[in-house]
Length: 114
Image: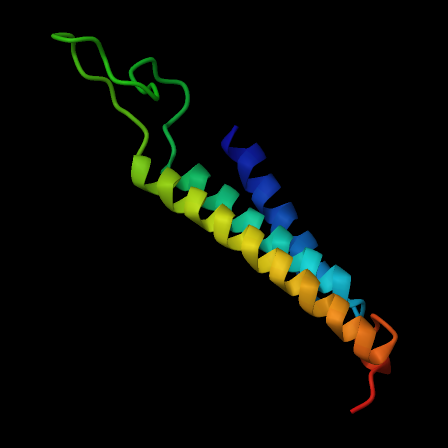
């Protein structure tokens, strides 16, 4: 599972970087959204529980029983905050790209007048 997460994070970062380097402004915005999701998956995978052990569960034990190892809730809270911020950033950037399209008549950044 660790290899699958590493491959997923690497593929998301590669796809995001590829999209950011495009000339179409909407693809650049989508690339930034993919990069933020890649960072979120990376943070969750680094702060989560370990696999393969019966003692590491995402909930606490019953009263009086031995406490199990739990996942770090701080990482989950930070990623939830990052998801909300990235959603707002993506909406704002799409609004700006629509305004740039109205001004320039094209989404290709190389065809814009200086």
